[in-house]
Length: 390
Ligand SMILES: NC(=O)c1ccc[n+]([C@@H]2O[C@H](COP(=O)([O-])OP(=O)(O)OC[C@H]3O[C@@H](n4cnc5c(N)ncnc54)[C@H](O)[C@@H]3O)[C@@H](O)[C@H]2O)c1
Image 1 (tube, rainbow, N blue to C red):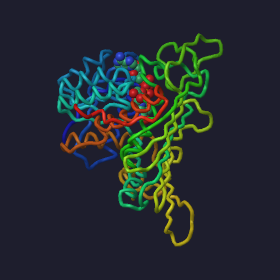
Image 2: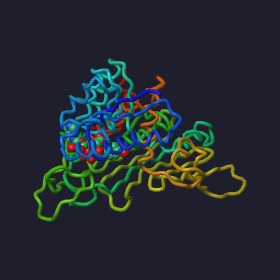
Image 3: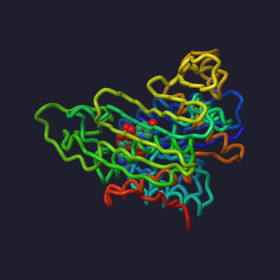
Image 4: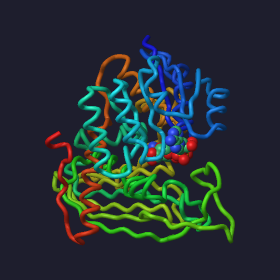
């Protein structure tokens, strides 16, 4: 069993979720080659550091992430800070020879993701990226069905991530709404999840055209450390939202299929509708995070025309049995984080490769860059693989 000595940079929602994974992995996955050890955490907020050492059991904490990255007793660094800190953190971690698991989108702008990939490649370190929804057991099953030819030729893909996290006008102007801390808006934040999912299920995207919108232009300013879902009060001082609330695109896949994507953080109604529909010549699949334990499957050749049938999650699918035995005993959001962290640490312990890593993140931002170009040109743009030449 190999110790994986961990540093976590940023102790908000995701930093805590990954730290909790490290604590859960031994009991969830008794047959494993990796032994997670929470060595050091970094955050500028003293309260979060104190909680991380007291409640998660980190051996020590520091306000300076560079100290954590440089520590000799750290093997792997989890980057869970606001987007525009990803690249400097990754540059320092890879230069120190550490493996890096970074939350998506890896930087706030496509060029930063490409630079992160180049740093990791030059250093020869292992990388992982937090497209956690790819680890849903039913999404893995969907990919297996598609690869087996069960859907025939893929003709159309529909991806969307419609979230209400920013739909309240009194929702605070946190880092996500600011160019210097987040980079782009939903095209970085949640389109990254949708495009990663599409590439995982249906393959590469070759051309796109799209649009964007900002629907809530001003928000209350936070005082102190603000949560993702924090709320101000009427009359509070406000500041400007600097990036997009909405993005959509039409696309064509390399295999000839068509696709549509919609993402929003301000829409009212869908609370966290991270969803896809894949249509093929022999059938279709449909999944939605809001019903994470259900995969809908339509078979054209079914003896009776039953319409869509529901496949419930269960221990017949990969990883599910670690959390609950039998069928239709549900798993949830943080369980996907535990699965990805386990898979990444196993890959470090055994020396096997891990996907999705920074190369796959560049595939995602190659599409994002073409979308951004289309916002300016107002026309179709070819997707160029931004890894070429690196
Ligand atoms: N995969 C997912 O489902 C998912 C969900 C949410 C967020 N994310 C990603 O995770 C990352 C973090 O998002 P979050 O929601 O956890 O944010 P958050 O605001 O909850 O937490 C960010 C933390 O970083 C800390 N921080 C800020 N500046 C710092 C610095 N210089 N040094 C050290 N710490 C610093 C903050 O104090 C805060 O504790 C983002 O890149 C986001 O895109 C991914």
